[in-house]
Image (cartoon, rainbow, N blue to C red; front, side, top):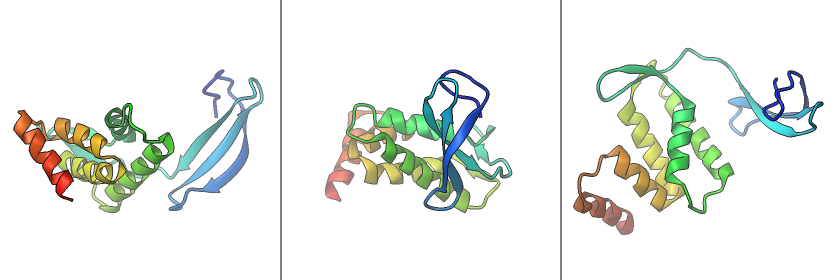
Length: 150
């Protein structure tokens, strides 16, 4: 494994342990060159999941897109990075537990919104405003009222 800090091609594993749901293995690594430590996750490669977009185009599933969307929604919010990673893990588990080869993007969007709702209300509204394409303030207020009624 190449070091993400100095790009040295050899690193060594310090510790290995399964993630809570046993879906992958977490490895702590150390670079012999620069001495920095980092974490990697080893996961079984599966058949690629295809996402059907709104315009019926298809693209391969990307965990990074979900991560970036959640990080953007949580920008300047008191949400620890560890909680964001756990949320992404839960979303991914829900997606792959559907056991489909192709999934419409709106299903993934709903799963993300469901998880964001319990993570942070402001992050949820931010994500929903883009995902649901709020056209005006009234639509935005309706979504906020739903949150307040809960």
